[in-house]
Amino acid sequence: MSKTISINAGSSSLKWQLYQMPEEKVIAKGITERIGLKDSIFTIKYGDGQKFEEILDIEDHAIAVKKLLDQLIELEILGSYDEITGVGHRVVQGGKYFDKSVVIDDDVVEKIEELAAFAPLHNPAHLMGINAFRELLPGVLNVAVFDTAFFANMPKVAKYYSIPKEYREKYDVRKYGAHGTSHRYVAQRAAEVLGKPIEDLKIITCHIGNGASISAVDGGKAVDTSMGFTPLAGVTMGTRSGDIDPAVLQFLMHKLDIDIDEMLNILNKKSGLLGLSDGFSSDMRDIKARRGEEEIDTILNIFYDRIRKYVGSYVTVMNGVDAIVFTAGIGENDQYTREYVINGMSWFGCEIDPEKNLQNGVEQVISTPESKVKVLLIPTDEELMIARDVESLRS
Ligand code: ADP
Image 1 (cartoon, rainbow, N blue to C red):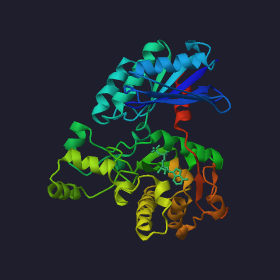
Image 2 (spheres, rainbow, N blue to C red):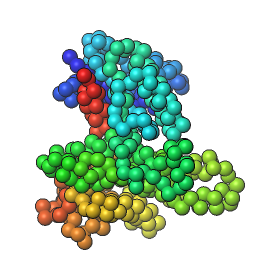
Image 3 (cartoon, helix red, strand yellow):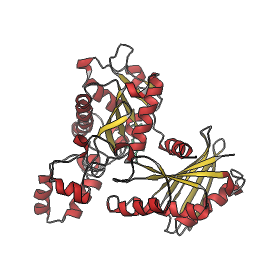
Image 4 (cartoon, rainbow, N blue to C red):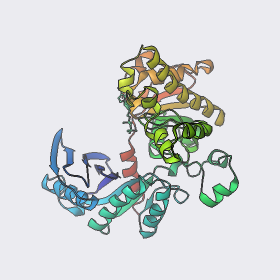
């Protein structure tokens, strides 16, 4: 029996999903939180709604992985370690080195380490997961799936910033994007749902969760995306500002007498919905519960507006669009966001079906049959995409 596990290792967490492949059946999933802290929380969900939970001290990722494998055996989800034939690791930053998923060897590990300069919070955490699995399951196929890979081959016109060439060449300063695995999955799925080859489609994918990004996908290839050198760029997010005039940074740093690290911390963690609502909440559910209040409505309109502008500009980038896809927490569950964005496109015959738009979280076409552009709601599945990439690299 072939089982593949998708891993998303954070600095103090290990999120995973175990698949029976090639059937793509989820056998179990779970998360270990508070690794390295006291009272780590270890959870496994399996079977028909069964749940195992334990609070214990888990010192590091190696111990977290061993605990996970041993518990899977104890719960008889696994017969032995040997049943795991593939491990897929989410890696946030693949930089200039990786334009697709790769089998992990020492050289790949070194490059992920080197790229930590571009993703200091993420890449080192992923490496802890990778090292733990490579040690515990020697000889098992480990694959790295990069968030940036889908965007690595974007045209230069989208990738390059209008800054001195030297900085791009010497320091690799360019647009890398993020959420690529999700954009790739929903674009492929949209083509399947529409029953058309992806090569023939121009698709705009809107991944709108706590972090949010919009991408233009032409013929299955990403040609532009709203996130940039880091995930701070693009649309308004839960706590991130998205695009902003850099001169604001200089102005505020003088006014507040703060350094650039503090300034970026404000733009990353204290802005977006949270900042606009004066610290009330970064969570769309909280914000939308207060719809109708004038200030909250302005905030919501700012949020919708930034998405709409990116979608509009990507129609021009691709000289047309066949399908617009909404995914992730807000994209999948918030009818207001979808409605506002699509209402800005009625001028060229894009029309949403109000009834279907109310059915949140369900994979479906939500535009009217007459609509010239199809609008789709597609729940994302990055874990499955990771498991598929592992399978495709099994030689
Ligand atoms: P991330 O993976 O980036 O942390 P998610 O994709 O889980 O984020 O999305 C989280 C966001 O989705 C939050 O802002 C949350 O409020 C929002 N969300 C979840 N359910 C709903 C809903 N029913 N209506 C509106 N927003 C929702």
